[in-house]
Length: 254
Image (cartoon, rainbow, N blue to C red; front, top):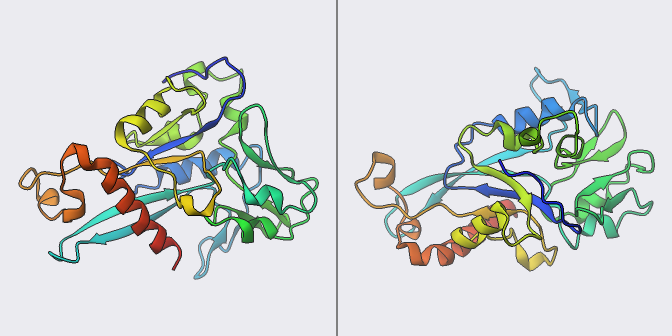
């Protein structure tokens, strides 16, 4: 793992590879475990073993079936979602107390629980549904990029990454500085046509998603039923990223 760069004005965020995410929820579980005693603790759970469990989860994983209208073939895409730490974060501008704020030094969006009044304006303003209201605490909570972990001097340098990144068994999550064009995350986005979610909202999210790689028929049973929209040459990957992004946007907005 690459250590954090030393230059100032960082823009920290995540790259999530939809090609290899298997939907195992390890990122969500490890996120919950770390943050239950971390910066935003506690993360309340209500009736966790009952018929209608409720709770605060900074990472949520959605699964969508992408269907090719022409052939009827389908492919399951697992779509992890958390705060995107937008450059133009509407959750920050609507907050009446200034409890929601974006740090100048690294771009991380945080919530000050001491000044949050639980009005939920930030959750209404966020087009990505990334805010979590803690009913027991009466305040809004969200992904912090594990700010108490990535700068923790008591951890080894290679462990100073968000909990979700450290626990992904498939290596589908990457963390780094998007302000550095030579960082691993910047290079991944450039090489794989990484895209921002719902750019039409004008939020300029920092996090990026990598589209599924092209498949060739006959490589594996799962590949043989891949939809035509994903069965393309490498040169067309960026175009297909836009197609998949629009499809997921429509699914999330329903």
